[in-house]
Length: 378
Image (cartoon, rainbow, N blue to C red; front, side, top):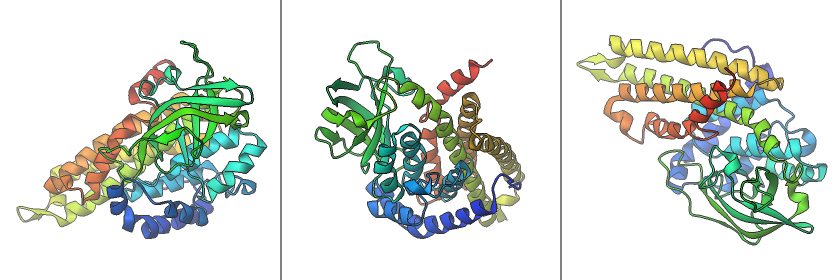
């Protein structure tokens, strides 16, 4: 890879710490977690003790006071090893920022320090059976009754859904059909009326728990609202650019890892008495892959610089998410093909990465929606 000048010596130190943590504490157990469909709570506490959760938070909230480049380092290191779980980035870089940016001081001091320690696990609950990329189609209601909010509805495809203690959730403040207002609020998982469906049996991302969540007259104090009641939609849209860039970061890192796995495999594997790496087709295909990854990494690093300065345009973030996840699909398909039949075996990282990659073109806003966002700027 070309030198990446956006990172400092401190980022390099964090990268080394993260790499050792994932190699020691996650990689040896990942296959077992894939079979279980969830990572144990102990790994969250270990990550918190290592300072690898909620690194962007100020020290007063239990974090390391780092920038978003530090978050990128952690996403990359987990992706380089092909680790689909645990869902650390959802917890640290999606859930925690909503509380940090839109919560009251009491809310921040109540929930953020235990999240940084890995004692509370966070999830974001937006998607519903009839509302995916179109958040205005949400049907879950959060209706005020005096000093309480009564929550009713259903959420689906929720990452960290089985293990989450804390949900940042979007719901409508009225049962009136057609209303476009949304309320953003925090829901503790020990509230009466809250329940979870069974863990989904997914094509990939098997070590990351995903399920449905149900809310049957769940009562919350109005102090659990983030921002103002009925004014949550703009808060959601403000955070989406960073969420989509996170997906792009992981996509490029996974593509880089796939190139390295394939380069090593084709050097060792022989066909007709010759290492596969020496065939012109192999060299040309890997040359194409390497070039495209370099292009993607350059673009993502530019976006990282912009997001770190709070200058990332949402349409540019959509471009990054769309293009890098499409690239990942092409790269993994090419690399699996160069593994031959072994590329289809689950024991090989390329097979697991191939299965894990497909959902990246769907979540965080489908790539069709990304194209629509980009098209509106033309």
